[in-house]
Length: 144
Image 1 (cartoon, rainbow, N blue to C red):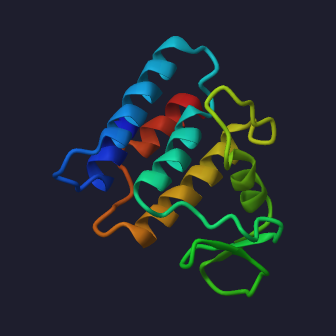
Image 2 (image 1 turned 90 degrees about the vertical axis):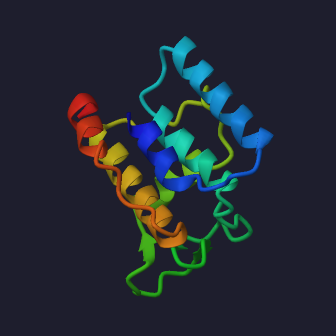
């Protein structure tokens, strides 16, 4: 339900997009066949960012903060949209990973929730009319 709602709120294309279709198909097949799915939704959202054209710039990934407006890693500047700390570290842990890759740092429901909220906020900033999925609270109850 959550993934369906995210997709319906984020995909606005009318033309064919075979790469996106294949990503969605392969993701759902992987989810259906796997038993290691606790971080699937996080992997999925991060991979979806590239299809939405808002994947972060990784050129300064060594920096410890992330500017959500510009989509770049940066030095912390104390502005509202500059995030630092564990959330940025956890975000970095997922970048460039595959669904099968284990991200041991994000191993609690609290850490997952913080990272999902970060990703949703990032998508709200960059995708017109994207609203926080209402099914997110159900997801938290099921896996929290």
